Length: 98
Image (tube, rainbow, N blue to C red; front, top):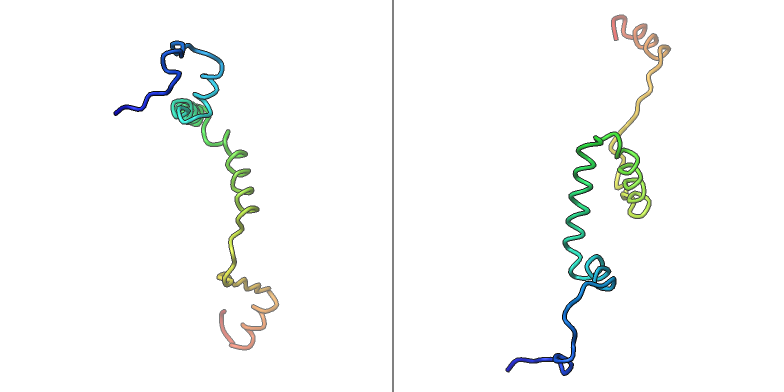
């Protein structure tokens, strides 16, 4: 048995309206609009190049890092600063080259 709404016979034919346009963009039927936007962004990226998107990409990355910062588990990099005086002392102590 098919379930039919009570006002089915009194409903007007589907006409294009501003409400339908809004539902197309925001509702479940907004997939075509999302696809069109994705295609436009891809074309713009191809035409303008990567440098035009640098500010957008960096801004998105900075926002992501602020919202979800990476947890530092351990420091993986050690910086060793060797100056000329230390190198000269090593050469004198070993009697040879560094």
